[in-house]
Length: 621
Image 1 (cartoon, rainbow, N blue to C red):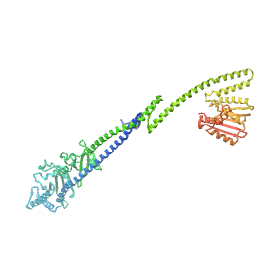
Image 2 (image 1 turned 90 degrees about the horizontal axis):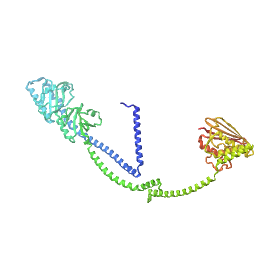
Image 3 (image 1 turned 30 degrees about the vertical axis):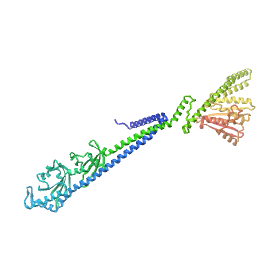
Image 4 (image 1 turned 180 degrees about the vertical axis):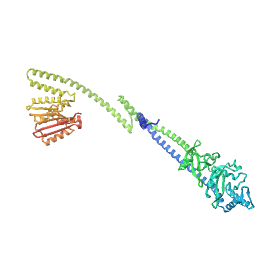
């Protein structure tokens, strides 16, 4: 079943995720090991991995060098074979050219075309000419390697250097390949290659011949055919002489891949399996599977024929030396690595003893044993660390004793403070009782003042909730102004202009009271005046505006005030401690900035003798 592209991407992703999980697991396991174990593993990896990589790389390049050397050796062998075999084939061509261009032989052949019949010579002159040609053929055979020469005339008569009872030359006309000769020009040669011998007496000793054939033309007309053969053994004997070892196979093949010559006669005339690979391989060598073994195949084109020389050398034997080198290297590295490992473990154990001791001490301290000490001596880094750790433990014990003393003193002070505290609810209840009694006596104004004081005191003491609805904050302001009007001669009027959708919006408690107090003290100089409190919602922002008709500020004082409240490093000690809360405008601004961050904004505008306006832009979220 073919997977879709999405399935393949998902499988790849899952595989990568599994790999990441495994890697993370190994990292966690490594992190849980002791320092000593991690040092040993790291040292082993740092030595083993470079050694392994070096070994693999050197093994790879050594194999390449040996392979190149084997290819070079095979190419040199084929080059020498080319020279020797070409010499044999040149002899064949020499005989063929001698017959083709020898005037005496061609004139005799031309004349005998008309004087000879299939039954033999018809005159003494013709017999003499037959002897001349036969003698020439014998002379060439004596000078050259053993060969069989046939001049086959069109009238059926022939000249040979072998007895007629060995083979009848007219049988050549019956061979399938003979038709190829008839179409040749006088300068073309037909290379027949290897075929079974036609000499009866040589069939056992030399079962195969290598033959070339040619047409003899005189004045543009074909009169005869030249057929020259040599024993295939002549070539295979050369192969045996040049083979570097018994397992090297040398062969001669034609353009179609048929084996012409081989040390093994059984392979002759068979098809070579890798002819296409030889034709397509531009490097003239490759590694092939030949007879269930890997062989290094090297080929070379023959100089004077469309044939190729092929060398097959067992690949393992070619690079066999590398196995010995590999075993020796591995053994040597194994021995050295084992010795190094023993030395490494000993050195790491000695060097990490102080660390192990310090680790044991820290675990004991973690379990609550502060009496233990490392006791590490020396001037090294670990010794100094152990000494500092021991001093730290001494200091911790001293600090614990000091803390115990301080805690005992603090508990005594808290007990005394609790004994001196008065329950705030007792105060509220007493004030309410006084208020009720005053109401019963008919003094409602004093009762309202006591109610305002009680509410303001309750709001001041009860600080459980940091945020309250806007209407509760307005109530606090009203109570405060009522008390301030009672305390001072001037009358302060509060006008609330609150949008109905804002009264339930939650704001920080005691956020407006300090500003009202600031306006009464500084804006009105504790005299009468009017303060208008407005609120509305715009773009999801709660806007609260305070306007007073006090004396206001000039530009320089207003700028100084802005710089003061914009300064984050304000000094609480500079605030007016005589006020109810001790909180000024800069404290309010910094508090709101800490709550709402940069989304909060405050604007102040003031003019001399006209009053001051303060706007707060509070984000609802």
